Amino acid sequence: MSIHKYNDKGKLVEPWEDGYYSVTTILAVKHNRWLWEWKMKLGKEESEKVANEAADKGTRVHRKLEKILAGQKFIKIDKELLPYIVAFNNWLNEYCPEGDILSEVYIYSKKYGYAGTADMICTIDGELWLVDFKTSKAIYDEYGLQVRAYGYAYEEMTGTKVRTAILQLGLPTKKGWKFREKKEPMNVFLAHKKIFDWELKHHPIKKPKVKV
Image (cartoon, rainbow, N blue to C red):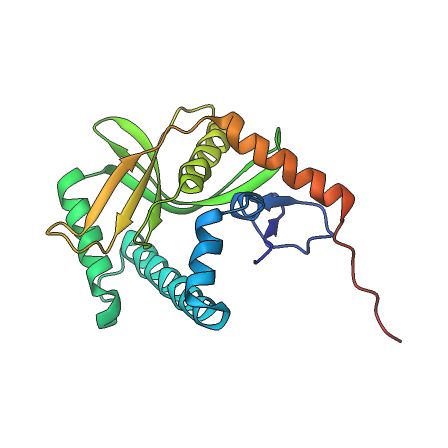
């Protein structure tokens, strides 16, 4: 598991430095029964290979979408990523977001001490939406908690209400996407945060000693 911690400006810092742990780092404290079952079924080496390949593809898709939202017209797209890009363009054509579309927006909550990056913030039919992109075949409960935490942090920072959703891309359907609003309770995410803080208190991450 990668540990991500950020300062107020959104720059990565070391775990022992002051800052905010990411929402995904906090949610990783949860014991995922489905994940362990999947790992046992495939085996350690194969499951790690599949997970790493999926993570790499997800990162590449996110980078291409960021360029599209930034207005770049000529973007080289690998054949493997094409279904995800086509699906995203299909979604844009159907929902027609109004005005500026923000991407990779760094947000954090001073009140609860966490941070994250919103994939997209846009206006649809006069309402503000915070959207997280997913390239996985399944949508898990923690994804909803993730965007709920992002939405709360955004509202804390701006004073503006925002609806939260998951945009699942690359599905083997005609549209190639599924758009789902998520309304998970904030107190469930905060329960994860309490467990995370409890574990850090008992097992703090210390700065490595420099050998001389």
